[in-house]
Amino acid sequence: MAYNVTFIPGDGIGPEVAEAAKRVLEATGIDFHWDVVNAGADAMDKYGTPLPESVLESIRKNKVALKGPITTPVGSGFRSVNVALRKELDLYACVRPCKTYPGVPSFYSGVDIIVVRENTEDLYAGIEFERGTPEAAALIKLVRETKRGVISEDSGLSLKMISETGSRRIVKFAFEYARAYRRKKVTALHKANIMKFSDGLFLAVAREVAREYHDIEFEDRIIDNMTMQLVKRPQQFDIIVAPNLYGDIVSDLCAGLVGGLGVAPGANIGDEIAVFEPTHGSAPKYTGQNKANPMAMMLSGVMMLRYLGETGAADNLELAIANVIAEGKNVTYDMKQDYTAGVGTPQVANAVIEKMGA
Ligand code: NAD
Image (cartoon, rainbow, N blue to C red; front, top):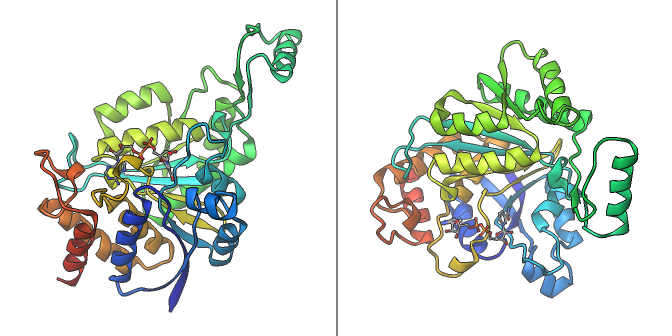
């Protein structure tokens, strides 16, 4: 059986790492029909929008996509394609596994954490009021009149919204993920001691949901304490579930624990659709140099195989990548402990394919 998968190469280093991931996925022996579509700067030039409707249609039809990173130019007026995709397709769960493979440049070993980040709400959703606008003034006035506090007239405001519905579905997702992948513990992050009505709600819902899953341990941590504990002893954590902003920060922190962005895969998942993409961005300064690490993109492919139920192929590919890392010969510059140049992106794919055949 062949899987229909939407393939978005992205821009910057995207097409290079996406091609490498495509090659190793094909080498697993699983059949894919790639529906190749473009989003980002190229699409903007061609169709006048960075996210053409045809891209969304393809993903809605195929239900699964593999995506390279896409640049969000600063001050260009076009909003992030990545954020728009998550919103349009209601991909409410961002899943980022952070695992130390022997041989990666890291201070740690034995780390195996999955960060499950809420993708649609919180400060990160971007409902903002610019300093000096009538809307900002109205909100400042409302806060004063309702005796909630005094906000300085020259403030810009960003809203933090956390709903019961949004909290419930992300925490349930984390517990279901724990069951599906035989994980033992879920840790919820918050600052409920201070933000009682947003983070407090998230925590209350998390505790309620946890009671439905007797087979999985549950605990919670205040976010500042959590960052310290992650740096001190990350091995104690298993699945982390967090509102959008804390999840964003903690998933980069966790990527740093396990060797950096070059080996940090990810997925954005909704009830019916999943888009697999590395945590890293388009690293524009390396475009066209074929030196970017394709492993994060390949490991996103491993996640996709597992999502499709192709566990054998996923295990095989992951093991081949782990073996290439352990050998330390055919890896890119960022994986070299001695700061030597490293091999090019396609060579990494060749080495992984060779390992799978061995
Ligand atoms: P980035 O992840 O592109 O790069 C940060 C640094 O990490 C780079 O300088 C590079 O040294 C290193 N790096 C990243 N990926 C690497 C790889 N595969 N191999 C080796 N080194 C790698 O982050 P940035 O510079 O903040 O963002 C660049 C652009 O990417 C921005 O426009 C941003 O909006 C976009 N972005 C897109 C996504 C996405 O498509 N999901 C995610 C993050 C950032």
